[in-house]
Length: 229
Image (cartoon, rainbow, N blue to C red; front, side, top):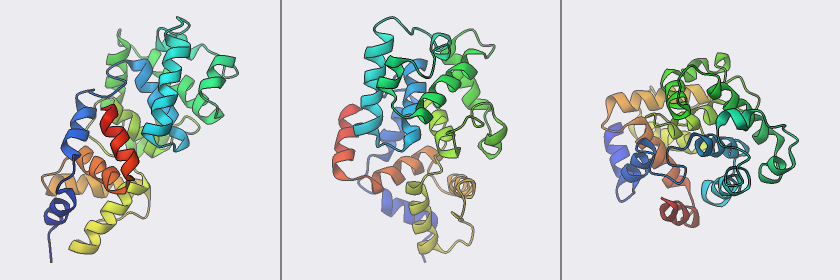
């Protein structure tokens, strides 16, 4: 019976999981290290859109409509917008995304760090997903454990999202290796299982996450994400 390491090695063979995870950790993605774009990316993803065809176009429109126009230059500016703002509604059609966007911006803008990027990264480093419901961002309507973790990933944290893609890969590892440890019955159990794998194999949590996404994404989405960088 193969070990979890062997199962992951087999799954990872020929995939760009290292490059994908490095892009997160080194902020080498379209949002770069701009806190406005990072928060917008996380908010756009709360509706379950795919990244290349849904999330990134929304962020691009946000940048052109609200940032380049000069209406929003800081997270503090963003937090003061009305959810019913016409420009904001044009970009973020879903009320859930607008709520997440404005309230996340407010939480980060109110932190004591003098720099908004530093504030976002400090929150991400301190945040505990296992207590996300008591976190000022985790308690926002529409921000579940997966969105919570995605924002932390965008802020450079080596972690994973509790999403269906991760559960599929974890279930495959458990089916093949029969560890008796991996459990995907609930999102937080999936995260704990991924954390266990990161401690018992050579794979980091974010690498497992990126591998899980790659294996479940269709070819068009893979190509689009690779081209976006």
